[in-house]
Image (cartoon, rainbow, N blue to C red; front, side):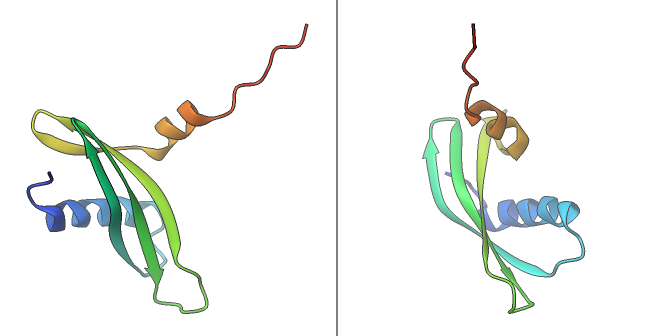
Length: 88
């Protein structure tokens, strides 16, 4: 389990803020599932601008040296991309 989920979420929110610094959101980690040294969940972003819908983004983590680290979404999206069939 994550020893300090609040601190972890602050780290996740800070990383998300770097991606889109102009949008004001409240972020919450949900659906957390831990399987050994790997974990996954969903970050739900609620916008201050009520005209925008909540946004849900999958997130994955890996435990290294006793600490949980975020796997950048580009890394696991590439793993799940459909493979093109070779044409002969």
